[in-house]
Length: 150
Image 1 (cartoon, rainbow, N blue to C red):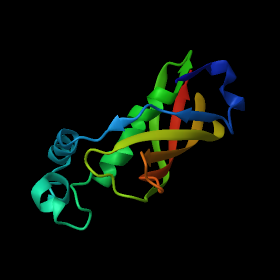
Image 2 (cartoon, rainbow, N blue to C red; image 1 turned 90 degrees about the vertical axis):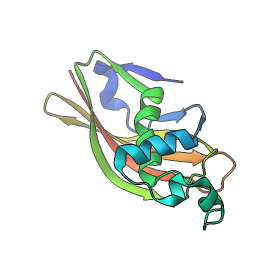
Image 3 (cartoon, rainbow, N blue to C red; image 1 turned 180 degrees about the vertical axis):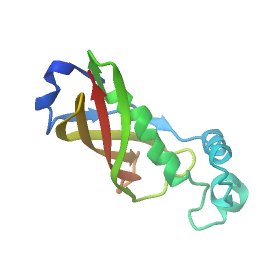
């Protein structure tokens, strides 16, 4: 569920737990499209037959594909009204904790760690965790930086 707040109310949001997104299945088609977009056609991602005999027992999503889902998931969790521009400003820290096998379902949970005023707006540091359904360890742990300008 999306938490929607007014730009006038964002300064005090540090510590806000935004909950969870819906689950998303990571399909072979999605992995193949990402491989095409990045020219990373390593067999552990795009060759299901060879990957089945490989170290993970199945093809896996690229780590950066898993990370890129934070953009989709972030927009599912949070929105600010009364802004002119939204910017994905970057990342402070990223860890690829566990591989995501093709066919697995993932979701994200997020906590707004910090809200800092910047020229013309606010920057959010958001602790994001992409979980794999049924797995003990997450796929990705990252601190994303987002800016909202009035």
